Each structure stands twice: as C-alpha cells, then as structure tokens.
Length: 82
Image (cartoon, rainbow, N blue to C red; front, top):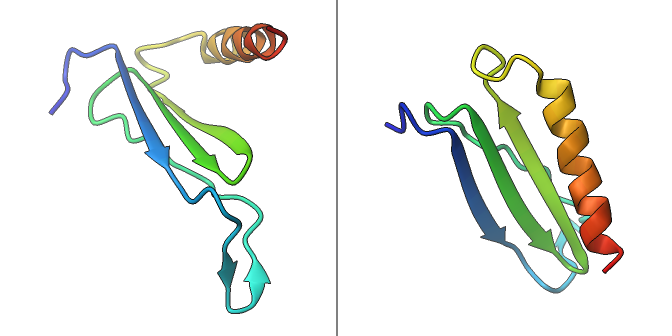
C-alpha cells in the first residue's frame, strides 16, 4: 500500500486515566508500528502521563538501523530537556 514511502507515522491516543483489566492496573501498552511497505514506521501512543513509541524498521531499506534508533533516542532526550 505504501510502497515507495520512506517514513510512516501515527499517533494513537489512549486513555488519560489509568485503566484496569480484571481488577489489575494496566501499567503500559505496547504498540506495533505497521510499516505497510514503508522503510521506517513510528507509532506514538500516550497513556495516562506517559508517551511511548513503537518503531518498526525494514532493515533491507535501512541498513544501519541501530544508528537510526540511536539518533531517534538522542533527539527525544534533547526535546525532553527543553
């Protein structure tokens, strides 16, 4: 569907309040960023007071995935210090 697209992003808004499942507090969600043919997909999701990211990389299109993740982490650190 997205063949030829380099980056795909999405924002999934979850509950602002803490939720329970069978009387057990849900601490966090884990998300999967579907590439749909894109080389790099990022899903941002927020739950309660946390913002989290799910990242999926097509390593045949992005041969240095570890470096890309490292740069992504450094960018988030810079933003959080503002």
